[in-house]
Length: 220
Image (cartoon, rainbow, N blue to C red; front, side, top):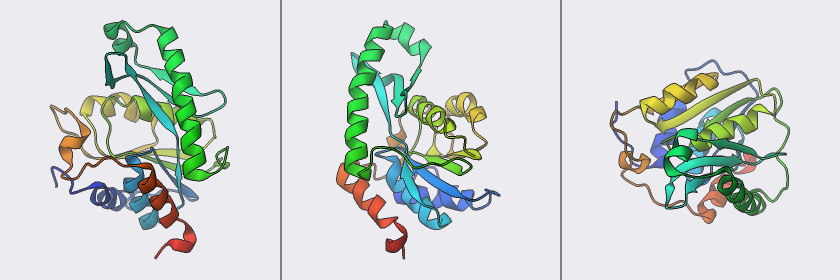
């Protein structure tokens, strides 16, 4: 068993092999969390012969440490906001700050939907098996917001697929999913990027290219 990944594509290939052992009911849709989850999810979608789509969600960091997630917001009507109360109290962040940042992040979510997908709303996925994919999890705030957003769509099942996450995050979040696939669950977890040789910043153009390449008329 590997202790790290060459890149996101190799992580996606390993996840796909694990997912293929599950008895997942069709129709299946693979949903990536942009941007880092897209190259992972694209490999999975091709391996499963499933469409690739996005669930758009943004982390809300504390004012003095943007990478420390106090909350996350996912698209929806109304948007889904998930707050980590322990972080909020420790950082001294009030609810007005979270609400203000959520509005700002929703503007970025709207921009990404226009740029990546060119449509204003997501398709109907009622009765589908949805596989939520990211390149890893730390606190799980964004994944929890994504999960609660897609649960509104009345899916048949929701599957979590991530290459790496700390055991405590999987313990707290995993019970909310129907299936969980996580390849690495290291003790002493610090950051997702520690488990990749290549963990470059995924940009908009890479996301667009992966989505384009995963369309049925462009698959090999």
